Amino acid sequence: MKYSILIKWSEEDKTYIASLPEWGKYARTHGDNYEEALENAKEVLEDLILAYEEMGKPLPELQKVESV
Image (cartoon, rainbow, N blue to C red; front, side, top):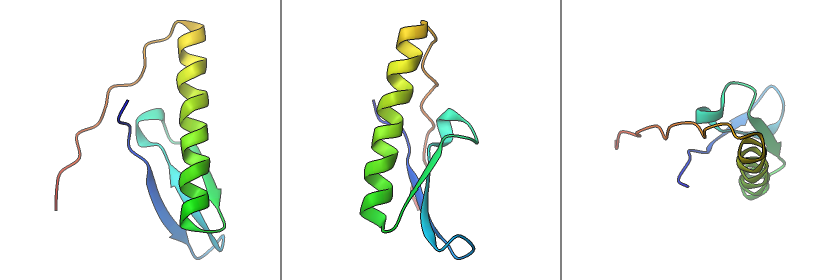
């Protein structure tokens, strides 16, 4: 699956915030550095996919990302 992971620095929280936009506003995690935020987001994504499959729920539609 090719879901989006958006990572940005939060000056307020002093950490990197990783969000999974296709999964809703609460699908977020964080990390002390970019790589940690990415790894944490991958784990959250795997858990979400597993949970949806176990519940028999359809997975969210992939979002199209416009190139810059």
